[in-house]
Image 1 (spheres, rainbow, N blue to C red):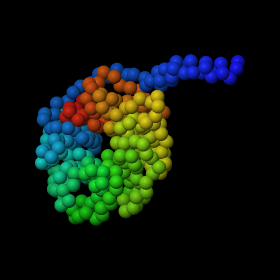
Image 2 (spheres, one colour; image 1 turned 30 degrees about the vertical axis):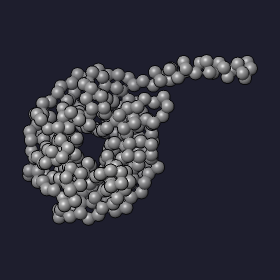
Image 3 (cartoon, rainbow, N blue to C red; image 1 turned 90 degrees about the horizontal axis):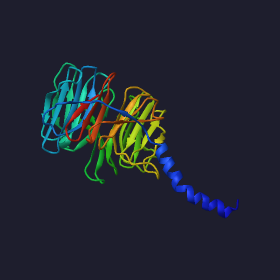
Image 4 (tube, rainbow, N blue to C red; image 1 turned 45 degrees about the vertical axis):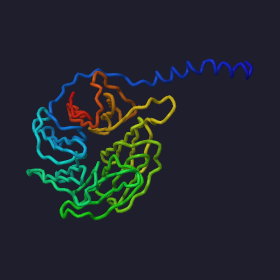
Length: 320
């Protein structure tokens, strides 16, 4: 066969090959039966966390108007109001000693020790914190962004309520996550940074082209997702990452991933807009699409041993 004929044959079959590639890469689908959990009026739900099979917390609110912390003590069947604020509450983190922390707009910061109620205050900076993380409670890292030229990570001492350090960067922070007592990552709009000294100094990682929305570590293993549909995995405490799915690629469908949670290294979920929910049973090598869910914009997911909880921008929660 001449080179000219071979070339035209490739051109002829290229559309068919493209279609085959697209459909061969479709995720397996699983039909889900779900139950909505009534919460009352709260506004958008922003974060959810369980400290045991029975006890859990969810936070949310409405912009600069109101914020709430809800808790459950029956495994998530019923939720009651625990604390309120005059602006939305955005993130939950618990340290290795079991103390809980909540961030929010207008500088709102809450802390709860084991057996006590939530103690709230407004930090003097009044920043609109959208994420937080801690390891042992000695330091809490808070991220905020008010325009791309005003983004910071604040190192805060919850015992003294004093700000110890402020670092300014040129990108928005969607998530801050500690790996261990020393190593911490911050992920956001087009960049990921890593610290090996509790946030005293930061090093940018060679990861771009994505709005990174969530990151979680289970020991040395880390997972990260992005708003363009990317999924990444690290096996060395976040020092380097492998793209399991690169969202900003030709023939790769955009998926608006907002949040992820893994129960253990192999079993986890990723959720996002328009009822998007995927599950992996093999550490992210393959994913199954869950269908039959409502077309809510999911903002968070928490995986328990026998149940999965999803929260949404519309203020609704479900489990399956």
